[in-house]
Length: 275
Image 1 (cartoon, rainbow, N blue to C red):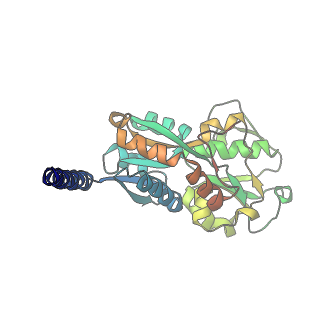
Image 2: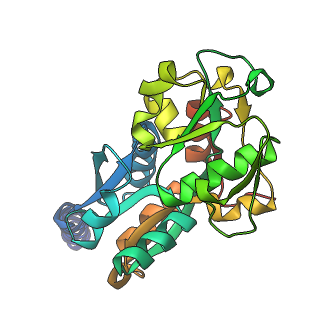
Image 3: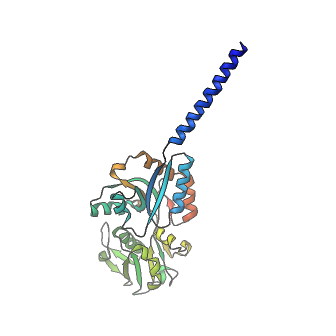
């Protein structure tokens, strides 16, 4: 009887070792998927936090970040299949790009809301602007219109009633300000040449501009919803399970804390923002 018990015990231990070995082999055999994400500006810190979340969840996803120097490239690169996702734009920008380029890119998740801000090396308040001063703004269609609306809200210009205004839609300009559209990435470098510049949050952070020294900031209201930044994929990948895991990892309290710490008042987590 004792001998039989010992045999059964040894068999049980051997089975346990075998099952454990199978489990380890199964875990080790899961292939890690590389996902390349295109960004513009200083978002690497946030995406490192997303990677930590994915590792914590044992998602077997490796994020590869590809940085672009301007807003013109990431959508073209994504549409062509050179990258898997991008995260640099708001919905209005994507809609405009799809329309202009016959694109089929789609939103798969919300990220942050990044109010535009006005910076200057010459004045400390928008009230210091004088007649004929120059204000530079982003020259891409959507952010150009958004910057003009900021100047209207601040009381310097009046715009025609249009969805996406351009400098041609300025119908009143009480200080005869010279509004100078420039490539968004160039705005921080040209601050010495203008009296003020309306600059996107990511570009400002990347240029190491102190957000506390912004002389004006775009107000967050119900009208800000189209400006919420998004994660974008090709239409065929709208329901991709791997990409959904990335969105879920991004939209966590841990990543929200990193966003707040990194960007302070310049960007806010927007996936559950209450307007």
